[in-house]
Image 1: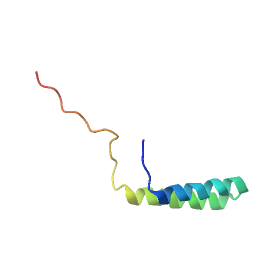
Image 2: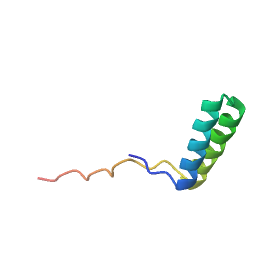
Image 3: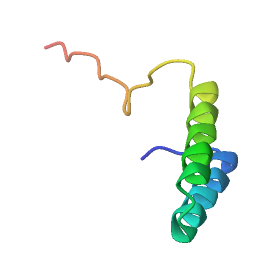
Length: 57
């Protein structure tokens, strides 16, 4: 599961409200801002789980 900052959640809520009202330009702008926030928070790709070292017998 990926945890996002609260700022991203607020932009997603704004995008959902814009979709509900039929404001596709506003929804697109809110999603673009959310995407920019996620990119700023995550400098590189992080694996979901760390790799386990090989077992030696």
